[in-house]
Amino acid sequence: MRQFLVFPALFVAAFVAAQEPAPKVTEAARLVEKLGSQDFEEREAASKRLEELGATALEELRVGVKSENPETARRAQDLLRKVERRLSNDKVLAPTLVELDVKDQPLDAVLAELSKQAKWEVVLGGLKPEDLAVKKLTVSTGGKVAFWVAVLKLCDVAEMQIAGVSGFVAPGAMPYLGRAKPGVRIAADRNRAVVLEARGDSPRRPASVNGAVLIEAVPFPKNVLPLATAHPSALLQAWPEPRLQWEGTAATKVTRATDASGAKLAAEFTPIPTGDIRATGTGTVLIRNADGSVTVVKDTGSAFELPGGFRPNPRQAVIQFKPIEKSVNTAKELGVSMFATVRTGIEPLCQVRDLESGKAATGSAPSGVDISVTYATDSRGKLVASVHLSYDMKAIHAATVDDTLPGMRGGAAGYGNHTVYGIRVADADGKPYMLGLGSGSNQIDPTNKRILLKLDLELHRDKDGQGPPASIAFWGTHAKSVELPVLLKDVPLAGGR
Image (cartoon, rainbow, N blue to C red; front, side, top):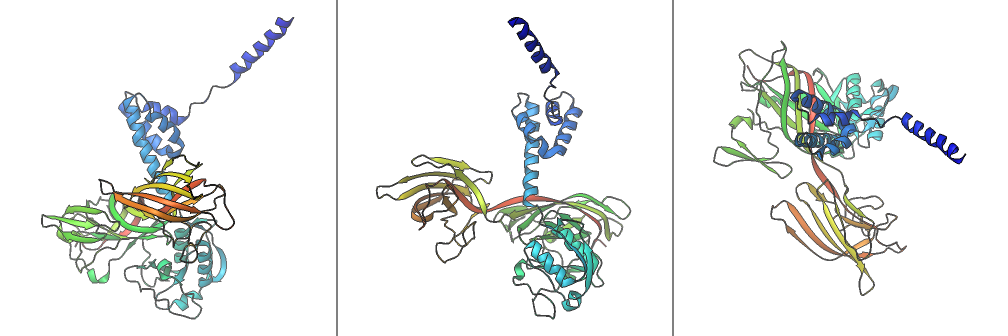
């Protein structure tokens, strides 16, 4: 009887197990397997599809990197790097989202609301901003949109254009002076303001929004027109959101260019001077970029400075095309990848948690920052920590005591933000210790790229007391390379006649 009762139970269990669906093999997993196919076209198709899947295929690609098939491992590694770069790019360039839904409101009031949402000032400039300020608008973004999408919508409705952003002025626009005008708000900090002006008789500029950056095709300054060059040329202006620290345009790559008839335009290589330019005397030119790096290119003379003494600023790029027989004054389509260096705001670039007295703890981060720390109580009963810190000097800037960090305002008053060389030590509740520098030393590594710091810190509890040290973080900014795909329509070209 006992065996009779057990048998059905086993039978039912086996039956249920047989009915359970086998774990589904994801599309990404199947594609990763095809990366090692003997059929070249199948390998290529799998690579293309995995790149389209992007973030959803990350785990499968990480598995593929460990494959015993060399072709699978190589392709998976290449795709993994591409996807991770794209995710990092998207994170850095994520736009500030705003929403407008106003009816019959004065323009300056609409811009005040936009400023409040964006957390930087959007103001009116130009010759008679007071005339624009009282203009009544009805505009809706239809929900939350990128900041620059909202600005372009306002510009269309009110017939305006961008005059300047964060102190950079559009060609032909008036510099923002911030003088008092009736009914017009004045920017408290013109170096963080977005300034709009009346468009007048000027045509609408071709524009493309890529996250937190707006790219416009703008006219060349009048002092270089007409361009005495056989190369049809376009001038692109990048307008990053004021929160985004744009260090310089590094390069551009034309991906598509056609004239009004649909014929292809061939791009000419044009170095972009983002800093000091010095001839080396050997037929090359050394460009010291805004981020401190150096580029050496062949000296092509006028490619660095257009007639009239014009040089693009760090937020501009000149696109030149090879001379052609017929006159070309418009690029019907212009596709460009603009490469730039941007710097993040103050953030924790490397963090180590779960510290224990007398035990060494280490941490590394994608930013390239390495930390090693050991803390203990010395013979005097004081908490001390030995910290080793290493990072790329060009890419990383350590936070200073003047920077405001979570829970602590920067500045000279009191103890600032409780950091020393960007290092901050906190208890389990995140309450930071006051730090004192007992001793320190620094040196540059053999590559002349990384700085190595050794710090002996004293950890002082505040008057309310704290728990034992639980975490250490290094705060600073990180320079990152980003790519901005741009597609512009009906771009006016100068020169080439």
